[in-house]
Amino acid sequence: MPRSSPLVSVIVPAHNSEKTLRACLTAALAQTYGAVEVVVVDDASTDRSRVIAGEFPCTLVRHPYNRGVSAARNAGVASSRGEILFFLDSDVGLAPDAVESAVRLLREDPGCGCVYGVYAKEPLVDDGPVETYRTLHLHHALSRAAGLTATAVFALAAVPRAVFEEVGPFDDNLRCAEDDEYSERLLKRHRIRLTGEVTGRHDEADRLLPLLAEQYERAQLLRFSARNRLRRDALVVNRVSGVLAAALTMAALPLGLVWAPALPVPAVFLALFAVSDPSLSRFVLRERGPGFLAFFTTVHFLAHAALVCGAAVGWARAAVDSSFGPSHRAAARRRPVDPSKGW
Image (cartoon, rainbow, N blue to C red):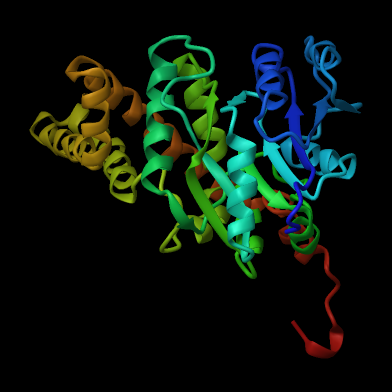
């Protein structure tokens, strides 16, 4: 890292982001760090995202059809000039010193290949209790994992360009769980740091069904991201004990409904789920009180149920569809067999 102030390219993928894009770009261009360029990649939006991006002094890259966040980030890198790449989701409003803090931390640790930050407790746009649930959940998960970690989240993350060129681009085949796949490649030669010195307010799903659909979709790739998420120092968003308790509750509930004496069994598993993450429960209780904790626990269980269902579907899809998952998996299936080596 040079001693002078390196140019930082803030890469913002955007797809139908008109709700948050103006706040995102306003914050990105109001950083205390002066050497910043912003590149917005419009991933075939059908709303006013491109118009909003055009209001700001940034580079606008347009995709003719929707290709997903991985491809958008790669396109943003190709159109940028900075020595440091700061990947920023279009629903995140950075704190004013976020870029400055990220540059300083990368400079202090030359072996660090990625610095990423923590979502604030307050959402970018407050749309009600479901959004508050998700905001508090992710803030707590990221905050308690601060330090060196095995998992990067590229919603607000800085990577030196030299590291990105060495590790390679994001996997265009992945529209979610790309963080875990990229983290695996990054860890081979570089450290990853999660820090509370880089922060941003995040806009989350504000209705229950979209939240559950998001969890269901992301969980379908758990088979491929499990290697990273089960590492010793990986980011833990949902504890394994909670996932197991939710799965056992769902498995035992049909028996309890058809045979009344068995009804206590799913109730016990549900109680185990409620106490599976005491630190999270104490945090929510302290922030919002007992009434909201009851609401939080209910939504948290439903989110876990969606996660369990998604993981089961993803496992089945992977068994029958070689194109499902990371690109290297499909490539391995297409690789010709050497007859001299047999089967």
